[in-house]
Length: 531
Image (tube, rainbow, N blue to C red):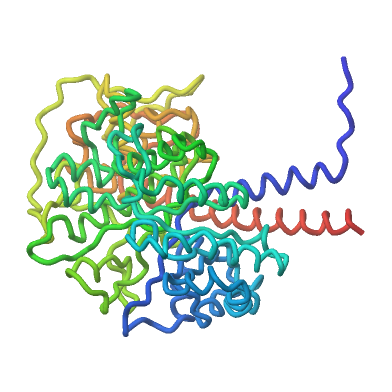
């Protein structure tokens, strides 16, 4: 038998570091926008305490508020700072101004404050200001040069933020293309971003897509709720949510220009919790469904149909409501929190907790289409005529059925696309889907059918076994046959839910300590290797 080459200590360290960082990075891809168009926001230190009570990893600011940057020091939270559109002319024409900007807004805080990205301008390419558009790239280049001069060029990236209006076509997603009028400017900009390794920053808003097409099926498609899906005629791919469709349209546009290797980051997306009587779509129910579904979708690590297995870094808009923003009420009502720091609705971002179970008004079959709370009277589903199917597990040892147990499982023949929509919706309601994530007791078999079955049942149990909670647009049914297998236990009552939550909380604490210890061990070992 051939001998394996001996492992060097350095290779072991690199492997351990890779495992540690991959484990930490795979937990969440959610950031938040910190807007300041308000006169009633809490002090930055209080906001930082709020952020630290959540699993939010990154914060995007539209400027470079020194008080907030300082408050975020030594927290490990990634920070995106921004140069305003009004700064662009001076940054473009005077390299010394760019140096001064970096010296004032980055150097005094880094690395204690983890600045990861500088955005130059916001939605400049669709502003219609040709002078500003022509000055955007030079401004970005001068900021990049200033970072390079301070030895920060490889540590902090430089980008700019675009609205979806940079596309002349986005439906179907495979036909995505940038506006031809922006062609040369986009090519030059993307060339800079490829060279520097910076991401393309985009602001997709399914909320606005729904406002332009306010049909019930469009709302379900936008809110990550069970729906019939939409087939891309160019690829025959069925899309089950608007977010994926919009992001893939950007990917297609990049591919047309030969820049599909550039990373996409979603710098803004969200849904308002309130609106004027003339506005369609804003409501607490819809906002919770969208942002909760989004968080679940990102954490599922499924990616998009054109970028499978690659979750897109995403910043929810916004942390707080902003009372001084002009326009309709919805513009001032995107916050996950009110300025008094009370939670507007729970999407499961708090550490060590989960969102409350959905009410009938939040069930998959009853999305809200108006700013007011819809009726809470659920429609009782018709008796299923299909034999339920339970997820299969290779060599799984079945658990003895419980005579008093009732579980919710998918019906036979339901497509993976519909099951994925059910999975996204259920986990988006704040239930604890960690058992079906990598390392969880129910992760294997790693199939959509198995993961959806677990999530659908947990949603049903958490909702008190109400009939409407095992409907999922008539793709689910109840069974008395226990679908548990091996160490994967399907909850079937309040007691089992509480017991499972206690076990998971302990596991999360242990995993956190293990990751921390592993990181420090690797750090110390690498130090001695360099000595």
